[in-house]
Image (cartoon, rainbow, N blue to C red; front, side):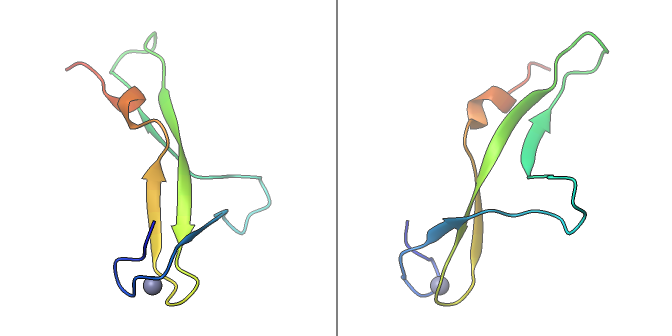
Length: 68
Ligand SMILES: [Zn+2]
C-alpha cells in the first residue's frame, strides 16, 4: 500500500497505549441487549516511513455489520 501523501510504500507497525496493559486497537460493534455478542475486528496499522502518515485498516470489517 502506497502513502496517499508522498507515494512511499507503507509498512505495518504495532500501536499501543503507554499503559502496560498489552492493549492493542480493535474495532467493535454490538447489537443492544446483554445476550448479543460483541463483534470485534483486529486493526492493522500502516505507517509511512517517509512522512509518518498513519492509516488504520480493519482486518475483518464485515464482522462488524449488525442488523438494526
Ligand atoms: Zn508518506
